[in-house]
Image (cartoon, rainbow, N blue to C red; front, side, top):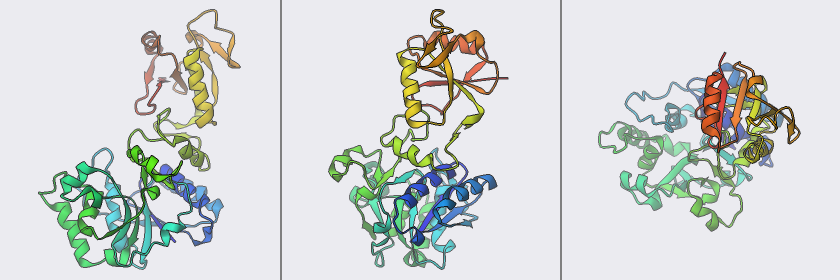
Length: 364
């Protein structure tokens, strides 16, 4: 069973998390061959991926790809240059006939061997529908024939046909392309609807929550975090987020937080020794067990120098003025006052790191 992922430094931790979930849910692990297609990767990130997967007895093969010239391609916030590496897979893996391609923002919750058994000999690929009427209409096809490219069983023999490659390039460079393209549109155009539909159970898009009741499953076999916020965003409210963190805890990124770094290097405090603060602590214990909360901060003098939930309560005067201290604001009622205090203490807000609570970091 050949698994292929296209990876960059931004998504390598998530791809490793996905692969961990895939391996742990696959009974015959010796049948797994993993190919990582990349244009540029940090050597330490490569090491962390390899060492995370090595204990499972599964090897990882890295395939460097120069990639297409994407100067005139669309690279929106969620469509990167790496996404277009999908189009290079048939030529890059020229000695392989069939692969399962999987995006990094996915968790595998079942034995994917079932997908490998799908016959795609008469098709370019097999994939689940995207259920996005807007995107399908803009492409000029019915939404019942528009698939999501996040998980595909690809027939590389057929995808290496000259006509398929030509249609990809034609669409990529066409001035008539209404959205200046993305890899999903390219593949939908190039396959000319010659793809095999698979159940959305094998690529359940978080953005399509209306499908969950139709699948007759409490948890789908494949969960695709296809919408923002993502599950790795601190305190984000995302369905099935706990599954992502369950598998991430088994990788070398268990103690790493995007936008911050290794959490062991920081001292964390919760501002607000009250109900709001208790909610912050509860969520941290549930999803981020490696977080070490040093204590609470509170402006109430009667609370200071006591304890709340078995943690000490300090005043802002005792808060260290360094760049290794992180303050998570649990109090919403007094947030304007707290914001002003933290600013005076030279603490600044961390953006794109938390979706629910305000997080501040000290400046040296």
